[in-house]
Image: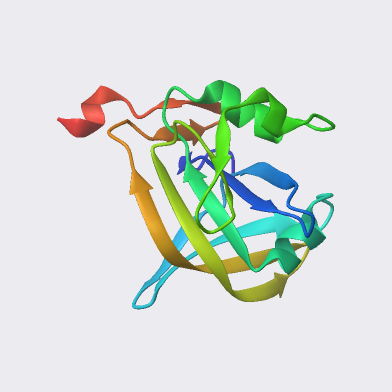
Length: 151
């Protein structure tokens, strides 16, 4: 699947005590326009699986092309990710990381068990867009979308 170009996202939520959690995800996709639904999937081996499944909400950050460090930070293991980036709590009580191309705040609409992953479908409550280029991931490399794509 690494040969399939995708965008890169960081998905965040908070546990029952309000502690933020997040991870790098490239399984993000659109599902429906009415209602506005998106999905992403989480591996059953991820330590924050139960937190995401029980939170009832999540934020999807579509990373900007210059956020490679943030991508690596949220893909790392055993690190306090939120102490190493700029973020705030949104009006929905979700941790929102600064500098993303877009942030979609969602309430969990449905969960689907699929093999060794759980697919989380979210109803989009709010979308924030910035005037940036989105990040592209392909063949284990990531960066901004090449300029020739826009001509």
